[in-house]
Length: 55
Image 1: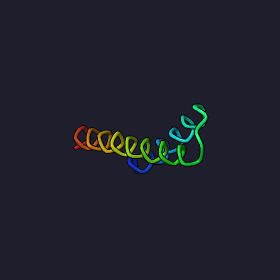
Image 2 (image 1 turned 30 degrees about the vertical axis):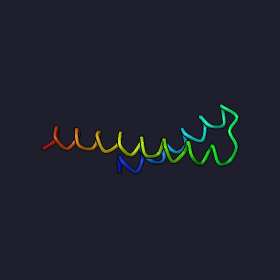
Image 3 (image 1 turned 45 degrees about the vertical axis):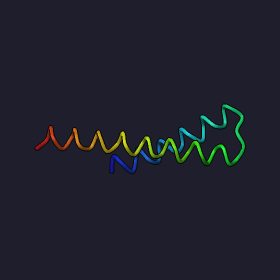
């Protein structure tokens, strides 16, 4: 669940970042995908850390 939240938040952040830089639709999509991947990786790390601390 944390990974999914990371993907969604990352994509939203990427669109916002591209919009602030004046990007077109393709730029927004590219930023959203790149930030979604980053968010997924961050969520994966958080998930692993939480699992290690709980177990």
